[in-house]
Structure formats: structure tokens, C-alpha cells
Amino acid sequence: MKRLSKIFIKSLVDYPLIYERGVDYFESGMIKKVIELDNIIKAEVEGSSFNSYKVKIIFDDDKIHYSCSCPFGGVCKHIVAVLLQLENGKNKVKESDEKLPNWHEKLSLLNKDELIKLLLPYVTNDSDVKVAIFNMLEKRGIDIYQEKFYELWKEICEAIDNSYDYDTDYQEEDINIYYNLEEISKLFKKGKLSSEIKDEFIDDAIEYAIYDKIGISDDLIESVFKVANCKKDWLRIIERLRGKESRWIKELIMKIYKDHLRDNKNYLKERKKELIYGSDYYDLAKFYKRKKDIKKTIEIAKEGIENGEGRKTELYIMLFEHYKNRDYEEAMKYLKELFMDEPSLNEYKKLLSFSKNKKNDAIWAISFFKKKGYYEKLAEIDLYEKRYKNVLDYVMKGGVGYFDNKDKYANKLKELYPKKIIQFYKRKVQVYIEQKKRSAYSSAAIYIKKIRNIYKNILKNENSYKEYISKLSEKYKRLPAFLDEIRHL
Image (tube, rainbow, N blue to C red):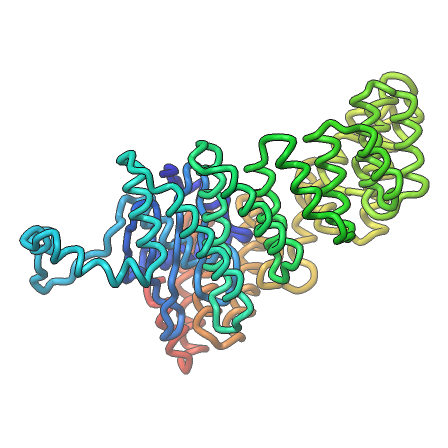
């Protein structure tokens, strides 16, 4: 089981606010039920309203899969709260004050047949219990590999079919599919399944992938590629893919010829028929580079920039790397193209690092950001170059959003401009209160905490904070749910 840490859990969330709300849920004891089934954790977490949500976490070697029945999607505050509880070593919910029976002691009084009778309905109806039992038997060296494969694959097929049902929990179905595919790949890798079962899996998985309507085709094909380990397998995959001539399938066939069968003739035949996007030209240029045909590599890369559609980033990088020690002007041309294609702080640093005229090129880059309206990217550069006043202007100007990235800059500036950042946080508080719903009040409380910390730790002025919270409580005295959220602040 992967060792959890707060740093790792933070890295899973898209927005810092989600992590902070997860911390609040964990500290407030919102997790009401935790069940541990070998490497599977199932939990129930109270929501902002009267709903409770089901969280499922699977520890798969060094990976973690997770789902929640709430409508947020992705890593939500409920998942964060459960992970924090596990990280703190609290995989059991606190017992209430009433006298509870010792279930370990009570179950030990039952005989084997009674325990089987008790457990059987759960095994039949709960796929997680089945997987946990298979894992336990496998650890004991019992040969259950074929049965485990068919159970895992049956569950995948049912999950795919169930995904068309509007009442299905899509997140849980997704992690069941992904985890089971990983387990199936491991079974084949261990050599525990016959070639006949492998052929059957390849055929069925490809058919599901071709007609996929729920976005799991890449996962299915990745698993097929993992179990293929000989020429016969790869030719079988090509045979099953032929005749379904989508661009995605053509790319798969080319990949097999180039990377797995090392069949250059058939790869080139297929590739030259399919040169549309910049990525197509880059794939062909990489092929010639691997063959050490530099002249052809550069020729194809330039042709891709001239004629290719869509993303050309990799082609710019390839040409810059080729010219950087040969022709400064050519290299700089492609480096600027790369910067305009993917403008970012990292590309800005690369540009100035290579430039022989840093001042002019910095002016050119900043002018490009302003012309395109990339003000957040410009704020990132201003922060890097310590133009803090410019960053403050970016934070304070315009409106505030629920998940805007101004927060990260505000956090960096709070020591230098505490009063201004308090103003910014107060605006955020107002935005959330005006939503008039419990989840928004919870978010407002997080910003009030930030305001309190600045008053207390930076300005050393707790009285001003008390005055602020008193006025806020008076103003919104008709919002009991909001007052409940801030009662400890």
C-alpha cells in the first residue's frame, strides 16, 4: 500500500481550495463509515447538505485509484478527507459512547460453516469482496488465476454496459474498469494464463475499444498492448483492427509496425498515407532520426511546420535542438516560434537563457503576452522577476472567481501587502456568501480564516479582525447556515 503524505494528497487536487475544504471535513469528523477490504477502502462522508457520499479508494502497488458519488468529478473534498484520515492512521471511525460488542470476539465463536453462510451473500453481491478474497488466496499461493481473470473481465464488461445507465456512478465504474485491467495485465505478466485466454481477451477488449462510447478505449488498448509479447499477438491485434479505418486505429497500426514489429517498410507505407497534423510529421521525423538520417529528419520537420495542422511544439523543439550549436539565427527563430506556440514562464526562461540580446528579447516576449491578453502568465513572470507591484495590480484588478488562480499570487504577496490582500480575500468572502448555499459558506469560511491569519500573524492586530467578523455576523444574521460555518472563527 502506498505511503500517504499531506504533500502527496495536496498534489492530487486541482485547486488549493479543495484541499482546504477536505481538511475541514476531516477535522470536523464528517467521515462516518470506513470499511477496509484488503487494498480497497470504502467510506461514507457527510456532505454540505443532508446528503452523504460514497468514497472508494483502491491502493494498487504505488498507484491510487479513487471515486466519489458527489457531483464534483475528480478529486473532491470528500476524497481528500478520507485520504487524510488514512494518512493519520485512523482507518476506523471513532466509536460512540455506547457500549459496542467486540465483533472480532463474537465472530471467533462461529464455526467455519456458519462464517461461510454469513459471508456468501456478500461475496455474491459485492465485487469488491470478491476481489479482496481472490487477492488473499493469491497471496497464499492458491491457483485461482483463471477464475480471477474471468471474474475481473466479467466485472469490466458489466461496468461498461452499466455506464450507459443514467443512474450509474460513473466515477466508481471508471476506477473498477481501470483497476481490473491493471490486475488482468499482472496475471498475464506472471504467465498464469493460457495463450487461448490471451487471444480471447485481445479479441474482446479490441471490440469493446472500437465501439467505445464512454471514453475507455485508450485504457483497453493499453491493456491489450501490455499482454501482447510475441509477433503472433501483434499480428492478431492488427488483424482485429483492420477494416475500422478511423485515424486513431491507423495510428495504432503504425505504432505496432514501428515500435513492436520493427517493420519499417509497412510503417513508412502507412505513415506516408497519413501526413496531416504536426504530430504526424514529428512521428516520421523521429523515425528518420532513429535511423540517423539527419538530412531527412530536418527536411520532414520543416515540411511539418509548413504543411502540418494543429500542434507543432515538438517540431520547433527538434529544429531548435538541431540548430542551437550550428546557426544562432535559425535556432532563435524556432525558439521564438516555440514560445509563441506554448507561452509560459519556462519558455520565457529558455528564450532569455539562449538569447544574445536579453533586454530586447525580454521586451519582445512581454509585449507578446500583453498583445495576446495573457495577464496571468505575465503575472507569473513578474513574480519570477520580483516585480511585486505588477503582480499586486493583477490580483486586485477585475473581478474575483471561484477557482481563479489569483489565490496563489495573493498568498505570495501577503507579507508585502497584507492590507491589500485582506481586501482581496474580503471580496472572495462576499462572492461566496452571495451564493447562499452551504458549500459556498464553507468556502467563505476558508477565506475568513486567511484574513484572520493575516491580522493575527502579520499585522498583529486581532482587534481589527474581531471587528470585521462581528460586522459580518451582524450583516448576515439571517443566514444561520453561514453563521454555523464561522462559529469557531
